[in-house]
Length: 96
Length: 96
DNA sequence: TTTAGTGTTATCATATACGATAACCTTGGT
DNA sequence: ACCAAGGTTATCGTATATGATAACACTAAA
Image (cartoon, rainbow over all chains, first blue to last red; front, side, top):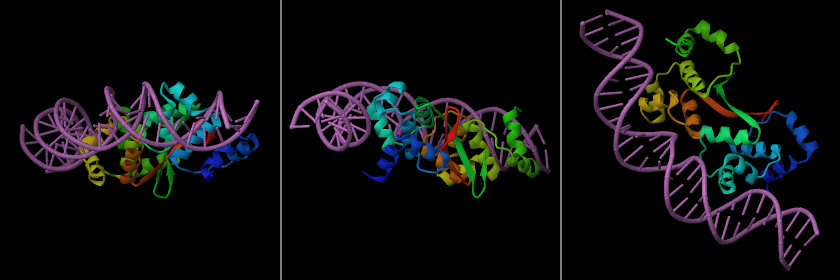
């Protein structure tokens, strides 16, 4: 069990999850995908069904084996009960 | 001249830009792309060169004629001097 | 240890993003 | 009116994202 797996597992526990939510962390796109699903308490198959696809494809996405399109990210997030937005940061300052 | 065009034009003026930066607005992905480039003071051709591609493709992207991949968004932003991040918002609350 | 649930990998087919090129349109300056 | 800069559109080729299916791996619980 590596750290990423550990983190995702930990999020399944309400207390951990609660503390975690308090933080504003920055991590990889993949981490964010997995975290959304974990927070939603869904399996890859659950998400796949909502997306009208298969769990293998969800796995591929979460394993970073592809370079997802914006709509894929949007749909995946929606299936997990999230909305997404592109946060852009100009060299130095943060912005719209 | 429609509103979107007007907004982009307005951003070229320093005073407008300055006031605009103060706001945290939320708009479409395309708006964000165009705004990044406008803020950077670059032409589509400028960005295209930095990306190693052609202005026509940049136009296609900004006109919403495609469904860009995450890496395309990242590269485009970098060419404009920005970094991007996927902001995920869980139904109701905001999160990582 | 077997089993069920979950996730992973491999492979193929199809849709589409992206690059290249060329022609065209729009607008501002002269 | 002309011109040049910036932006748009059309089209084609290639790479790759995504869907479908099937086989495999891992873990926890009985």
